[in-house]
Length: 309
Ligand code: A3P
Image (tube, rainbow, N blue to C red):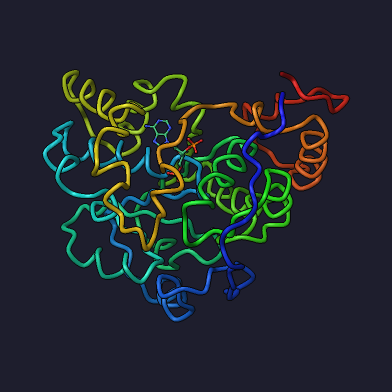
């Protein structure tokens, strides 16, 4: 376990937030209060919609690619010619709202919105949600690096500083704990499916089969092979329509890093000190007290609080 070698000073001016029902959103033309209110209260969910919902840095883009290829029966024509954000727009952004007008059903849409401000019309529809979660310590590390290239996340001088921001939930979309607790209330509903980034890593093919079952899509072996092959980290990294290199510098500062960074589980071990782990686990245990679902990362530390390395 080592301290992050890349501690550097912050190069971005501080971002300002507005809060919508307690959730911070970066003040930017992409996020406006009117738009978030519109999505929550007026956006019309369609029964055949599928929503790719995540807390940021949890595997959103990976799931988006999996869903695109499941819906094309493994045909890569669209995933190689249409940028992912147009294939599955973010419903809560002003740009996404415009982009989704061009979609034909069944729509695959993306969102990072927490449960309590998600589109109300979803809850009376037959639309489906796939909720992807990731070890929150890896989310912190991924966010720390992403914040250096993204216009919407405050960057930090060190992982330690980011850890504080994360544990306070003082960032775009708010607290991981609230997000997970909120969405996981849906567990057991027939239109809600959850999966972890770690499960995708461990058994990608089996995970794709489970996702297909949930969606009621039958893929033959060749189509399945194509999905698995084309959503591998390397394949997505090589696909300009999946790796965000086409996204304007206005959104991502490509000179500071890549969206497709490492794509591994357990990178927290290369970044967190023992003291940071200990602090993280204390807060985690408190915030997730009595939470009924166990995750693989709950095994990351012993009863005595020591990290399992
Ligand atoms: P790292 O920063 O740890 O590399 P999101 O899409 O929710 O923003 O998540 C981004 C994270 O998912 C990044 O993690 C990125 O590298 C990883 N990722 C994207 N596509 C992946 C793939 N095909 N396989 C594994 N990880 C992937």
